[in-house]
Length: 319
Image (cartoon, rainbow, N blue to C red; front, side, top):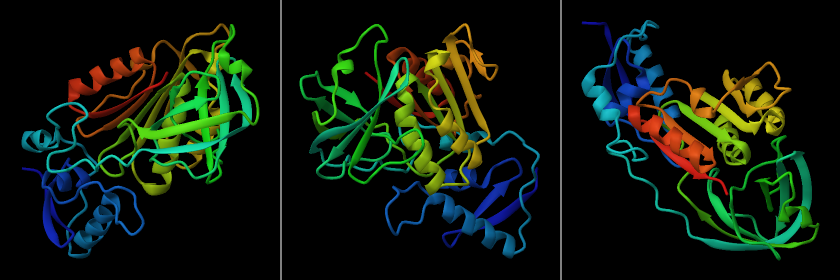
């Protein structure tokens, strides 16, 4: 039997076997649960860090860096019954109320041949968490389901709604969009929002789906800076990998695994891999939390891969 040590988490003792991460042990025993990021809340990661410090102060040895298979009982306790279901013993927060916001288009910028960045300034701040979507109507155009995000440099204003929107390079109705054009948002909608706490955060973005993933990744680096994160970002054409400034910021904050890929592109940079996103994901684990945003085929492929290991997967389908 491997070495064991005791951690005190929230005033209760947790036994950890060699090869188990403290987070896996605490979750398996029902000691901690992810909390929504609200003022005054102590997040699961912070609880765990305090428990680890208390355990070591009481003379417990730190777990060995050498990995061993996690006990089957622990793995089953961490595995959700269905993909996308919460960990056993945890409850999903009720969806926030739907609200309507109105405003005007204040910025339009072409990020790549196939992606526009559109900024709308609203009369009141938009609602929802990073990864939520909204029904967005630009005056004179059909309603679209879009994810409010940040500019690629990470900036935004409190009353701004920033969107990364796919367009047809051959010609698109969005090409007629003008400054001061009225816009209406209704939301939030969807269930792909960021949920603090849990295992490794695996973020997958295809094309304009990076908008939603960028909002989640940026929030996670501020709320849970110690949480392990991996990103896989792709596009049909290498020219549409418009998010390098965003990825540079994530690297500077400690995200070490970022993969870029493209289906085609004669001038593909050396750091861009060839092929679909689903071929370049990290090896998924049952304790992973996967957020995927993009076209239906990419989202479906990632959901299947997550389901095969029992990982929770939160899809965001982009129009």
